[in-house]
Length: 150
Image 1 (cartoon, helix red, strand yellow):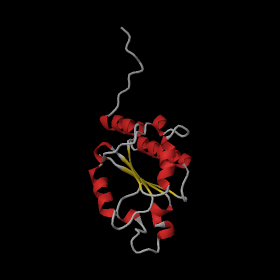
Image 2: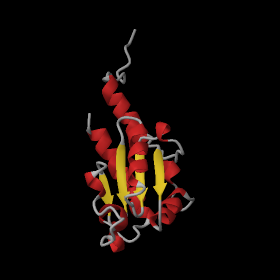
Image 3: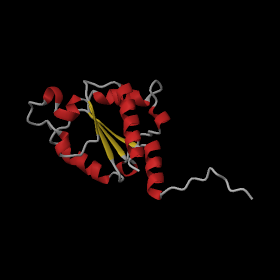
Image 4: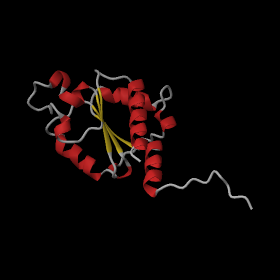
């Protein structure tokens, strides 16, 4: 009897990281104009489904949060609750200048000027608004980083 040489022995952690890297389930937090580009990324031209990204409406099913738009002090507690309810390990992409540093509204009292103080951000997409192709490439970058963890 010949033993198959292509049998792969691996740890459960590396298999879980591989599966997590192949199928990201984003929770969309589309607040302003960056949300239009996020919706365009899910449409047929860019098609995030090919990358294994299926948008979820429940934080308990998602492992990636895409914050697209301006975050105000009034909505920050709800955003933190959504972040806390997500599956672990969880990843966050801040999309657009408004989500990262307040953008045009940074001088306003009601706008959060640095979201990274409240929610840990894995990737930042600069631009006003960043394109849907940039969002797709940042998701691929995040997937490659997840695979490198093991």
